[in-house]
Length: 120
Image: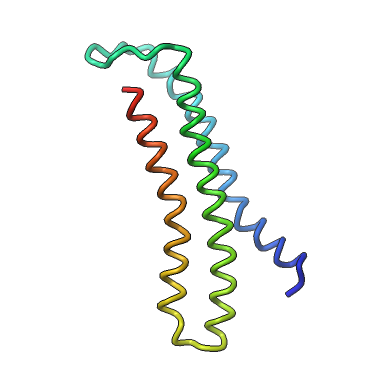
C-alpha cells in the first residue's frame, strides 16, 4: 500500500467525524438561542459571557476526540486487517484494540456532557 493510498483512507475515515463535529458546533450555537426564550426558575444564572466559551469548549472536546478516534480506528483497523490476513485467530485482539480506539471519542463526549452540565 502506498503512502498516498493510506493518506486517502485516513482522510476518508476522518471526513464523517469532521462533518459531525462541524454540525454539532452549529447546533450548539443555535440551541441556546432557542432555549433563551424560556427562563429557568430553579437554574442558577450563568453569566452571558461564559455561555459561548463553554459551548465552544464542549464542541472542541467532541470534535477533537472524534477526529482522534477516527484516525486511531483507521490506523488500528488497517493494521488489524493486515494482521488477520496472516493469522485469523487474532480477530478477538484486533476487536479489542479497535474498541479502545473508539473509547477516545466516548471520553470527549463525556467531557462535553460535564461541561454542559456545569452550565445548569
